[in-house]
Length: 244
Image (cartoon, rainbow, N blue to C red; front, side, top):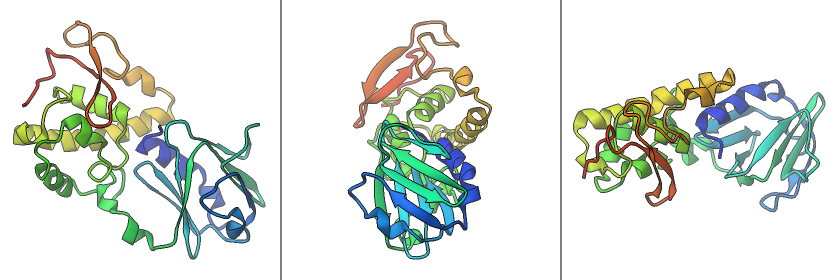
């Protein structure tokens, strides 16, 4: 599943289509009639967490790539597209994703201050939300899109390793400085993820995610499917403290 930084990269890549009219729309999506998009002009491209947003004058098309979604710019795959947009100077094709029509103003739908990569990100609001959920496991807290929109499993594992916190720790048991460190590193690592992703070196910088040996203690990492989401966690029981 693409995480927030990957959606930002997509948003930047499609900027040449901003202001362009859709001359043809198709695809096998059942959530909207592609014909409604035809002859509509793209007013903007936005992102919120893992959501990619294609804005038109009276509505927005939301793309969520789920676990196996993908896209192609100015090219296409042999498999049928979930949504295909043709422009005079190119095309966008989306595959195996969720497509949804949003007819309300986006400011009513999205809390921009919850997006770790948005300029309106508010760390204090994130801290307040965490304090209201003292029994939530930190592995779940980092994946909670209402608190950390855009954070995915890679960022979760790397942040917890950086701040030396066991993924099954409860947010309410973290010392205040650790709680603040959690919030700070979620944003810091997301932007580092973006930088490394652009230079195609992201995997080289992983310290915990999918790794087998802790680089600090040189002992085997534990791998477990933890929390409500049952997503993979890679952690060291020596250097990552459990707060319960």
